[in-house]
Amino acid sequence: VPTANDHDTVRHEAMHVAQHCAAQREGRQYGIRPILRGADLNEFVTSVLTDRQIVSIKSAYPREKWLTELEAFAAAQHYTAAQMESIVRTWCSR
Image (tube, rainbow, N blue to C red):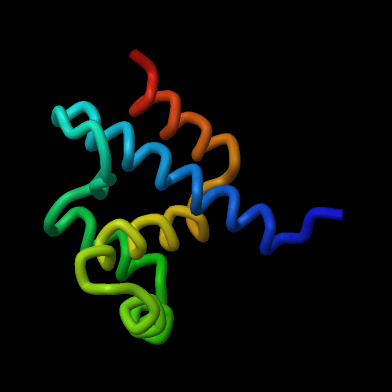
């Protein structure tokens, strides 16, 4: 039986799919990039995640993955499955 944590993980990974599509739109075949940038990303992450969560994420991932992971963790916590579906469709539809 799926748990709340399982659903959170799927939303997190769905954000990585959207991040990959965002990178492809910039012409990069591989890799991911945050959907939000600069102050918008910072405001979103800090409004959703606690300082403790941010420190934990930064300690678990190398610096080059911080922005994409922070966005994905915040998205998983903030958005519903339906909202995540819309984000993936927006970024990944051609």
